[in-house]
Amino acid sequence: MWVIVTARVKTVTPEPSSHVKLLEFLRAYRDWTQYIIDEIRELDHIPSIKELHHRFYKNLRKQGFRAHHIHKIERRAREIVKATKRNRGSKPILRKLTARLDYQDYRIHFDSKTIRIAVLNNEWVELRLKWYSYLDKYLDGSWRLGEILLSFKNNTIWVYLTFKKMVKLREVRNVIGVDINFDSVAYTVLSNNGKIVSMNTLLFRGLRKTLHFKRLAENLQKRHPRSWRFIKWVRTVRARWLRRARNILNDSCHLIAKRIVEVAKEYDAVIVLEDLRRMRDRVNGGNRFSWKIHLWTYRRIQSYIQYKALLEGIPVVYVKSQRNFKNFSNRW
Image (cartoon, rainbow, N blue to C red; front, side):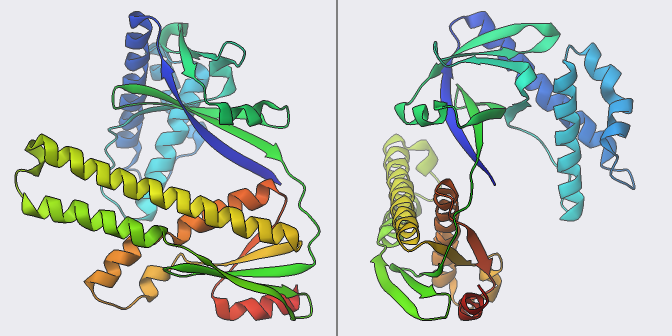
């Protein structure tokens, strides 16, 4: 099974001219993706990649794009139109400056921590990566670097590196069910014959602390309903509280996920999680409860558990409800 990880790295353009060329490329990439979207969204069918290529390739080549740039632009435009029609959405408007690049359109040098990007008219620009020590684990030879995403936001150029590696799943002999609650996360380990092997409850205070700082930020905003965007100290304090809320939430989710994976590894257990895609549709409650549900971190915890478990070769499965957990353990 392939495990895919995305790492965000900040970059610096040593030369001002390189920065200008890169922004020019990103704007052209966005604008021509928007052009293709506008051209095909009114069609009565979703055109194939071959059809898009035949229709737009020559035009895009005249703009200075490389062949692999064109392939990514056409594929991205098709994905957006397909998703919009499926969800019956309105006309999509692209605003972010982002570009997907295949390995043919960049050259990365981990020794010097630099990356060269192919831009318009077969020119190349070099960026210096602000490397982080935790990324060194992806350079041990077991990880492969694939597609990257180039993004410009907040006056900073970011590179999203996608690493992947093959992981062999462990042989499991037990099942661990995870029940995520507001203040705690409970787990139960069952053997293949349905007997309880272990059970425990992990305290989870991250969501309550997050709600506290979220309330502080909202109350501050309510005291200045019309002018808070123009008062510097209000913007600063509000941003600080929201940043603390986000950091507490991320750290708490990582700690809980790490502990669940450690237990699953100890008991050689497959992890069973509840499928929560329709959780909000099943919830009945007032505005306050809906507000808490909006901040609920079920999905984030589950995604962290799945990522950390796959790195250890531990399988993860989803069931429709915890009621199906015992039935699953009996069939396992």
